[in-house]
Length: 312
Image (cartoon, rainbow, N blue to C red; front, side, top):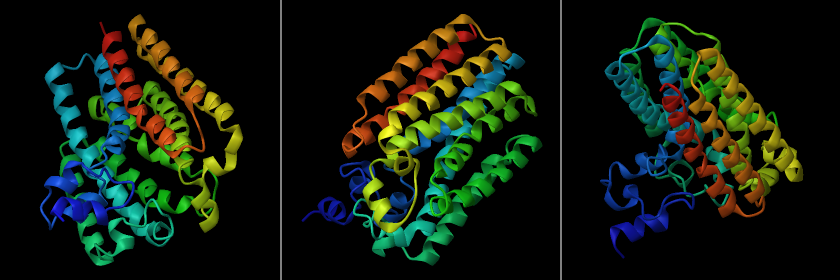
């Protein structure tokens, strides 16, 4: 058996079997790259897109020079990769006992014992240090906003034990970049950033409810909660509400930022994408749920291009 085949055998079911982490990473780094989900970039993209939206929209409003905007986007991209990884470590530390009881996650580095708890804490500290170094490149207001987000990062993993709506806290966490991106350009906050943030929360409620349907049977057995368990067969109706609210807030943000007509044409495309998600959803098909969840990367890209096009 080759090294890659052995790794695939040990890896959790939700890993990318033939991804670069299993094939190319050195032995010492392999379990840590799995721990931070380096082989599954969708989480990084979903964290990064609200940052890029906000930077682009704020740059339009402030007439920021393009090289400056690009530099800030690159900093946020690296920061999103690192801090998404840190968030995964926090989540896995909190959920290691639950993950051991779920077929999809029992092979993850912590429940399988490939990474010890003390090693995970050291790794988490290293990721947070890198994130801090990136954060210190930004203005003081943005630095404090970034520090404030840590409370949500620490809170989210425990919410599924107490409420059927942990996705609200996840949305507040994953879309914090909509506030930070605006602040990095303007050194403050304004209504468009808050509207983008609110719209992003509804976006997360939509895509993570779809994602949670993969685990609803295991979640019910082990006693953790999610919007998938709360909404069940009513999920499509709620997705209409989530995505309609998202689009309304995004449209209002564009109006308040004074963006051009191309942005609104992009929102029509996004509306079509959301409708496709709702009509295609098969709640008892894990592969279908995962495919639709991942498709939100495309939604984020369309939104970004719409903002850029609306500037011209």
